[in-house]
Image (cartoon, rainbow, N blue to C red):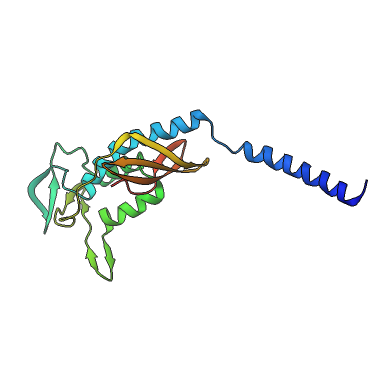
Length: 186
């Protein structure tokens, strides 16, 4: 066997091995369906949480806990920071929660100006400063039936979903067996 033939055989074997390995990295139809199901379950919950963070959808009392911060009402679905973080952890990836937490709980300071924390908790009582996010745009409405997978591997995926005549691509991340939003759906 000459060197050229031997090299050709080795190259063919390597290609067969790698093609089998690469084919095993694909995603099954069940994996794709789970991703879309998890996205469709997370999206409405994300819109609700965005309403708390960027809008003013948490019911408040007229009682000020600190200047500009109002205590959440007894009928509020979120009454503590722990409850807020728990609700976010069911929908958003850990990395994306850090981004949302900056606006919600820590505030943001950039060259163009600063935004104070929207939420504070004192003595186990959650309070909100509704002026922090005044003028933020309303969330878009999405047609979840149009959700489709653009790209997917075992850990990260990109979903495209329609909002009127626009299409938004959203990143999802697999954490503890659940696909969670890893970018804005707003």
